[in-house]
Length: 249
Image (cartoon, rainbow, N blue to C red; front, side):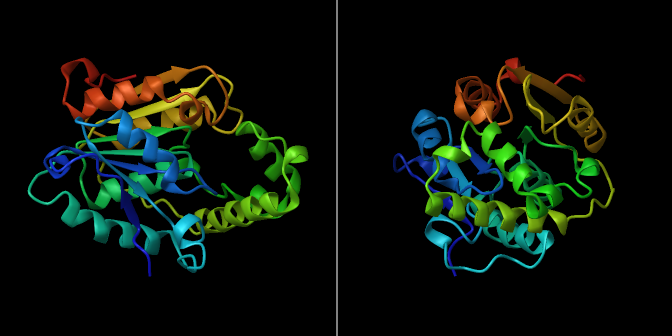
């Protein structure tokens, strides 16, 4: 079985730097974060979470439940951050939900989510992707991809990954408990038709350590298409810069 966590070292001292764990959106792999490792060289060692069924884990079966995936990721993450190493967790869309459950098991210094419903707003999320081709096309649109310009094989691969992750998300049930003792930052885009203002605001209820919303222009995947602002923000959090302190939104 392949590793659930990948990294792209920049130098021999990376292990002494803070760790940034990045969790991708549904239907995607973690190789998109390779460029982030270069952008944050000398600031952090970047790790990407790789679910089965894509990229270098294409032939591996998906976990049966959401909790199984979280437990596997957490098991690999603990030795990475042993000894009090600073950890910032970033998750985009479906990756934000994974990031939240990981944060409940391995306490990071900060949790950052983007374009992601709060945990209590995930009931049934993903059902449309599983059942409705029009919903799939809409999701391609939010990513800036026109289904009419995708060749048949590429579209089939993307559909397969999206549906696998959507099925996994449907196995998720939020079990309320003690709020996180770490700050939560949430990023949203003005043109996002997938995650509402209310969906995002719900994150305030999951933490007792402060919550802040950051807004950008664009659609559901705006933060990934133009990552400059979020990378600057993550760098400040990784440095524990006071300018990135959380305030209640």
